[in-house]
Image (cartoon, rainbow, N blue to C red; front, side):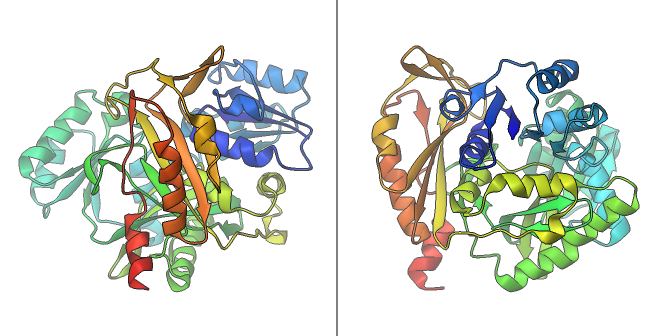
Length: 427
């Protein structure tokens, strides 16, 4: 099979790495790709937003399946246009991608179909949003409704912070994403990431994961796209996993089908595991980043037929096998992230880092300049490792990270701390 993978980040490198091992694969292309993806796929300088150009490339190169990595092309309707052209895709249609493209859409769906989530209000007017927020218990959560690259969320500890976050959204801090605002109840508990493959009718749970959104050690500082992750997530016990599927994932898949917008692709639920059980924080309609990096390390099955089963609507005949090992990834980011990152600095030592047992290095924001590897984004490298325990995976990933020679970057030193503490406590 000839496969085109859309995207350029660490998620796409992990997917490309896994897809490249499939015996079903004939040729793997990636548009636009990055410095690491180029080692396992042919990177194509396609303008992904130009759907006509993508269709032409698929036709000219006999592409059998397009795998869309990031959310923006999904929300922009790339799958719709490819499907109309007779090209098979893994990913939801534009209508189904509203689950990520509009937080208000998802909250309304939860309210209609009794899917557990935080109480909320949605607003297109700053003063009304502020009035509603003023009536809520602190802290209160302010969210830009649309796509904001993981940065459109503020957990306001004071009324002034809530007002400032609302004003920033409507002032254009997140572009069109902030033209509507969702004000939410703050949920107490522990966050977890839950993934399920969907074919429009059936949902198949994947392994669990937990990521770290805050930029600094101890979960401090502003939110980011994710500074690290590990799998499995101990907080998602088998009983909790069953509840997630029964109370959140399957009702969502059923609701989307009833609305005439069946969801096909991967459904990524950001969850809070509260004292009352799991509650939905938000949906993403693609593989998570950096969660994909740890999931692909643990996945023993061939990924390609699983994605095909979703596209073909035959997921009921499918299952996946997972390694009993734990996986952990540490994100190395460019100085300045999550603000304006410093790009262009040289990165050395990746070969030495990759020689650590159990380690794979997935590139997120890199480019090649001859023999030199340069930073070319905010999140730049994902130092990922397998181990018999989370603690062993943690030790291997950080041993590898220490071998990277890159003064222009930084990383958190405590990824996986909850799971490591649980292991030490024997719980």
